[in-house]
Amino acid sequence: MKGLILSGGKGTRLRPLTYTSAKQLVPIANKPVLFYGIEALVNANIRDIGIVVGDTQAEIRAAVGNGSRWGVSIHYIEQEFPSGLAHAVKISEPFIGQEPFVMYLGDNLLNKSISNFVQEFDREKPAAQILLAHVSDPQMFGVAQLRDGKVVRLVEKPTEPIGDLALVGVYMFQPDIFESVKRIQPSSRNELEITDAIQDLIDRGLDVRPQIVSGWWKDTGKPEDILEANQLILEMLEHRIEGVVDQDSRIEGKVIIESGANVERSIIRGPAIIGRGTRLVNAYVGPFTSIMNDVEILNAEIEHSIVLEGTHLNDLDNRVVNSLIGKNVRIYREPAKPSAYRFMLGDNSEVGIRW
Image (cartoon, rainbow, N blue to C red; front, side, top):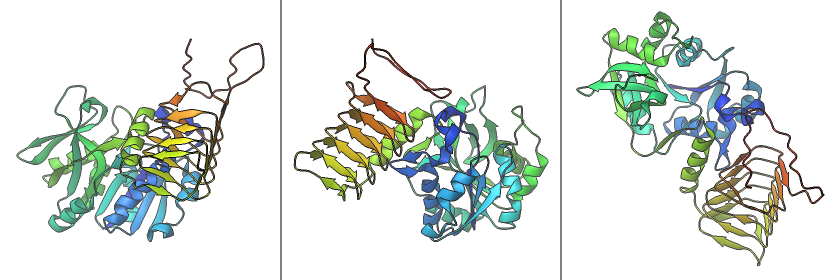
């Protein structure tokens, strides 16, 4: 059995971060989202994995490499333009061949292993097996309708409610799916929808089975979803101190301080993670915060946030909260008079100022 991870797409809902970085490489608890998907397939004993890449392929290739760190073989499949999930399946046929495969969306997170689902699919061999979860906003997802324990209908982002069972972004297919993706037509979004392809399997009388997942599942397509996923993952981590913490600092709760980090006269309240080479001086890092490598926080406070590599937070009067801060950002207090705000912001940035 092979694996297929979809890692194209432009990540428009995460701009301006995704103007310069692939959305699948945004870190959750200091690990790129994409890596969680690779690990899920590895844990399901899948060793041959294709990754569908688009405009950000150079960055993804550099981050993932050939897969040797996970003991797998990684193949890259180029998609010139994001034309739907079924299109990604269509162009992957030369890699998949006549083998069954698991398709995993590269910006999805599940807290439970998919191994049992994969084993059941391998044993029972239905044409497809889809993972579903109950959601409060089904109009934002592909939705499945069940009858007598079987999938009878799928609709992509329905305008009229047909149920609350959303596709969570993990699919298992036999090669029958390749005929279906060739038979369907583009949707109103001018994309080949995977829901239409699976519906074609159903209409042809093939067996499509549902599996409803327990535990949480997150589509990390929006900043608030990333922060929530970061919170959920941090709660699962184990306390570990490898960096240097001076006697005037205080560490509370589950905290990871990686090798090379330096903490001076600071308070860290977990769950939190501090990356390699990061320096905290007279700082407060509150719960649900992930600080990546080579960050400097001096005389500043932050909580429930994610800070990427090389960023500096210096001499801030107010605490930074609920924030997603990109690479090599500088946020500091300007002592010069007259008092004024000075910004250099990318498209779709958001700044809240307290009066």
